[in-house]
Image 1: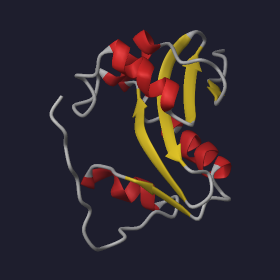
Image 2: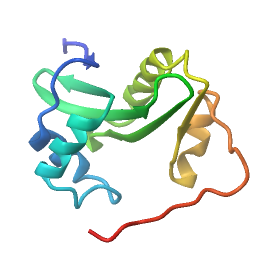
Image 3: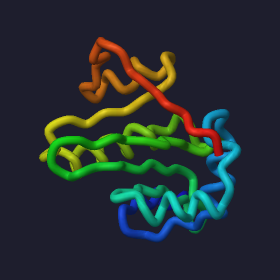
Amino acid sequence: MSKPYIYSFTEPINPEALHALLGQTDWADARSPLDIQRMLDRSQITLGVWNEDRLIAFSRVITDDMYRALIDDVVVDMGFRGQGIASTMLDKLLKRLQHVEQVMLDCATGLSGFYARFGFRNKGGSSMLLENKR
C-alpha cells in the first residue's frame, strides 16, 4: 500500500527538484535553478507535493494577502497526473486565500474548464502582457 502524498506550504522546495518538474512544461522549461531559487525566495506562498521524498507537484501565489492574489506555476509531474493532485492543490490554495478579495490565474485555454470547477470564470476584457528581454 502506498503512502499518501504530502502537501506542504512550509516544507522547503529544492530548486533542482523544481527545475526538473518545470522542465516537463513548455512554459517554464527554460528557467535555471538559480532563477528558480530567486523566485522561491520572493514568492509569498508556495505549495509543494511530495511522493515520499520526490517533489511531484508545485504551485505558488503572489499576493498582497488582502485584495489580490495570483496563483501561478501550477504543475504536476507527468507520471502523477490524473490522480486529483492539482484539484487538491487548488482546494488547499483557495482555502488559504479565502479572505483575499480577488484570486486570479492564467491558464491554457484547454484548462479553463478545470479551473471553472473551482469558481474561476473568464473575467472578460483584455489581459495585457509585457515581456522583458532577459
